[in-house]
Image 1 (tube, rainbow, N blue to C red):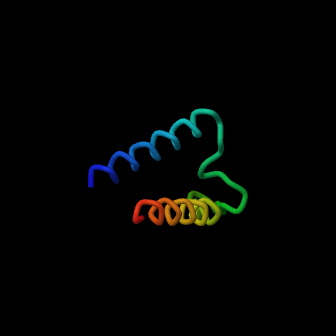
Image 2 (image 1 turned 90 degrees about the vertical axis):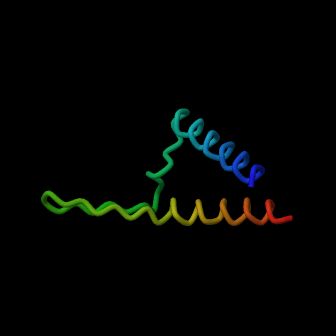
Image 3 (image 1 turned 90 degrees about the horizontal axis):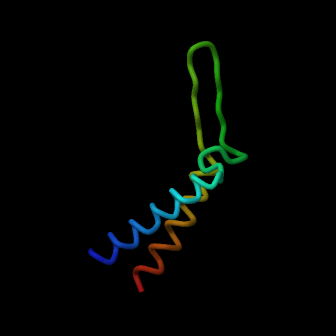
Length: 64
């Protein structure tokens, strides 16, 4: 459990550094935003797929 928490903290820190350096996490091409009147619907398709791939790889490494 401790190993997982350490690794999760490192991943969160790396994501924070990427966002501070200007990488548009959450605003990638393929993320859809629909605006109509006072309502906005945001669907981060590309971001979800990218996070899924990264988490799958990380968990596969941790299971070994």
